[in-house]
Image (cartoon, rainbow, N blue to C red; front, side):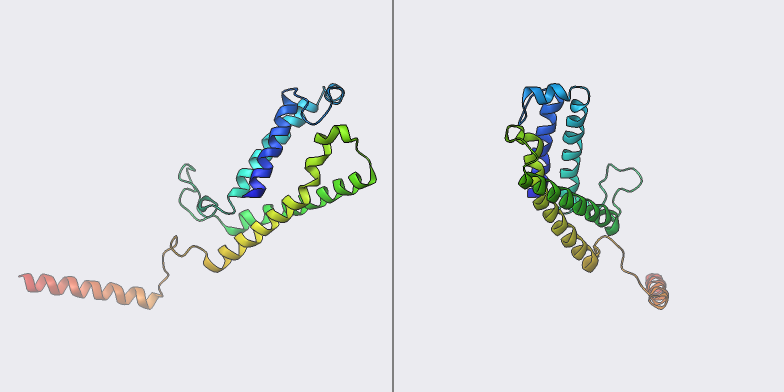
Length: 179
């Protein structure tokens, strides 16, 4: 939950840049990147929010069953690897990139006045660890459970055949008695 909130807060920073608001950066920094910085800000805002919502899917029920509004997949169980593989991949990328920013910050590569351009990235290792923890928890929960309430219990051929004969006998027996 905290990882999703952090992703949404990070999206606010990108939205401010996309709108031309110098949140955490100087006006000169925004002016230097006027050609493509708004696009980068829109990218950060969009994918930050999207990542936060998908992270919630690892902890919410709709991460286990496709929602009803999906035409073909509605009500079916989500294959666990469909969530585990991308989330694991992203958690590794976020952690490594965040550690790079921490190392660059310690080396003094960034100006303190431009904190909006580097400080949020220094928290990426924590976000990556939180995402990895949620991913492992999701995988363990889905591996052991696999949502037995969502799938029909499997019967062997013999059980199926016997159940069919019993129901026929009962039906024929009742029909004979009622005559």
